[in-house]
Every structure is written in C-alpha cells, then in structure tokens.
Length: 155
Image (cartoon, rainbow, N blue to C red; front, side, top):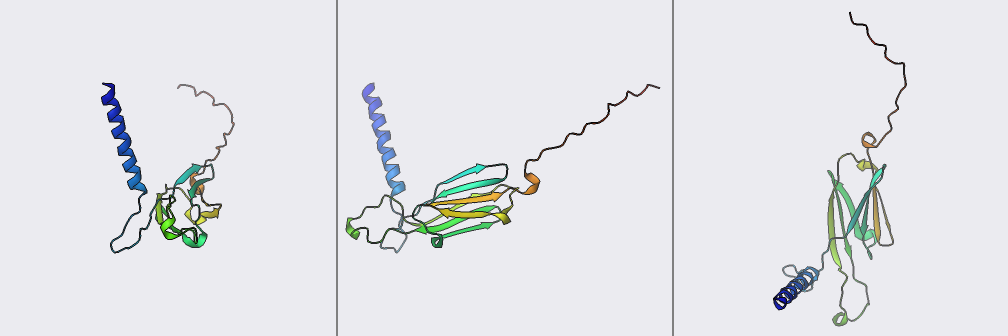
C-alpha cells in the first residue's frame, strides 16, 4: 500500500518537473535558428482611497525598451529584456532568467481617471498610479442637525 502511494507521489513529482521544464524552455518561431524567450512580467495591484496602483517587476529593462499604452479599459505593457553582453561564450552560458520580448494586458475597472495615469521606472520596477475619478472617490456625507418633528394631530 505504501509502495503504491510513494510511486504515485514520485510520478506526480516527475510530471511537475516536466511542466516546469516545458514552461521555462525557450519558445521557437518557424524559421528561427535561435531560441527566443517570451515571458509575462509579474504584477501586483493595490488600492488606496485615491488611486489604483500597479507594480510590474522588470529587472534589466530600460525605459527605451518599454512601451505602456491604454486602449479602452485595458492597460498594455510591452517591451524587451535583452541578455547581458559579453557575459560569457555563447556556447558556455546557461540563462535561467528569461530574455526577449514580453507583454501583459491588465483589464482596468471603470471609475479611473486614465488621463492622469502616472508611470515611473526605478530599480527594475515599473510603478503605475491611476487616480480614481472624482465621482467614485470615497467622500464623507455631512449630517445636518435640525429641529425635532412635531407630531401631527389626527383630524
């Protein structure tokens, strides 16, 4: 019984190893003689009372290799991470970091002021701040104090 359970666990481990190897393997395009990595940069999101904040992790990417655009309610980031030059002989370098072109599209909710979007690239991180539209910002409602209502006499 235990032997069968360990055998199944080992089979699961091998399947997971193959999955990771395939997902990290270079992708080939027809007619290409060299491999070209493609990847999707990770993103974090967070809300404040004033804005939606997005953070894309892009180590090794410069602003000239990056394009940020909005179409409708979609934010699209495209770019390229280039491998380091003179890192080692071509036949003696193994890359675990994906290089090549990348893209990511983020669906944005309604209620954002897309015209006031701000983006800042620093230390391999792209921070995007999109302010909330005035009509959806939380606001405090003033409660007025007035006289007590007098009871109406029944006729």
